[in-house]
Image 1 (cartoon, rainbow, N blue to C red):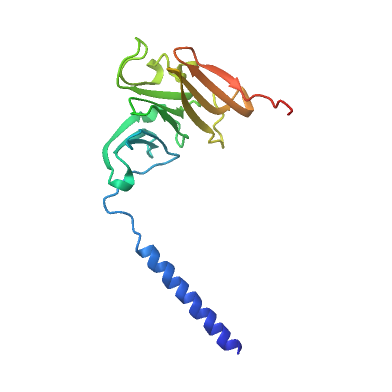
Image 2: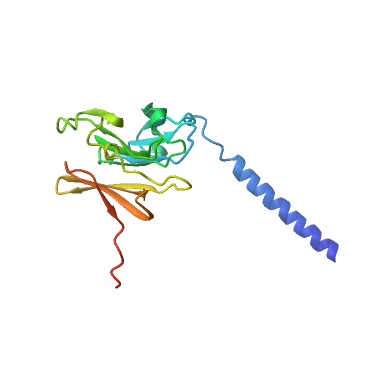
Length: 209
């Protein structure tokens, strides 16, 4: 009797193994997948029409962006793969965060520098002002990027980095959350409204309610 029970269990196990093996074999990676080798976290933004930008860091430390036209599930195509941040400017294994508008005419990429500074690269299709020109900008020469504020982050054993963008009656509000060296035991927000300067705000205390 015991032998028969063992035989039945073995047959069930083999049947399940065959089933899952068949399922796994039937779902290989698509042969037309675009090959990248992300080293750390990835970030992305999407337009209302389904176009998207995917940001990732390569093994040499540089940060790149892939452009995908259309929704992936409906036959989207990778139309570009370009370097955004030189390897000398980005911390190896940095977390990434990104925000953008509904048509990707403007997006912001956030990361940590090799000296643990909260850093930013910006893309705009049209110029807003002398300090907000069209095209790509970032690094030490970007006077309105958060990089210029030299906000120091805690990066050892820490991957906390998040961003959001809000359109408040035509005024853009940017909020970037990270762990600041000045307040290492809580979350700090680097915030910018319109053309105002960046400000650091610690996480509010509980109201007690």
